[in-house]
Image (cartoon, rainbow, N blue to C red; front, side, top):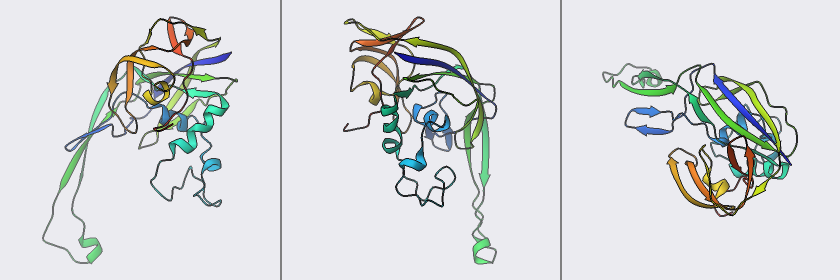
Length: 236
């Protein structure tokens, strides 16, 4: 028996993270990675599982090194029976912001230089009031937060649980299709993935419109959600 929460997420600020860099353009894909959602939902106890952060510093506010620890932080969720899918866009709009900066070396040298080399870039962000949908699968009841922060600017977003169902896994030998985005590392170790569309984004590209075979699934309304998904990493 598992509990599936169908969650809606609405942005209250513009959302930015660099999915791809095209010259001076930094573009945000309208898909939310499941790694980012786990951290934003407060499901990851990063202080507990980090061995590099001193006790006087909280990992949530201080990071001594820019080294991701996804495996260290997310694998414990497998033991708790919790899994979060990536979020797809229900409706969204994009906004384009231009930022500029100039050479300010004279601030360091205490003398003004004749050189002034301006530069600029553009960030394509997801606009406020854009809405997303994702699923949380848990073996126990969860209390999810109403407000979370996402992206480079810690943008504010509201979470609403649209639907909750208690489900038991079903088994089929026939291939089935799951149209929503998934993390390929989390399904390819348990299922035979026959076809899919790729969404290129770091740290792990996602897939959608997935046709897979492997047996167990949860029936959630008209969807067949893979029942044996868990956080896996290369070489697992």
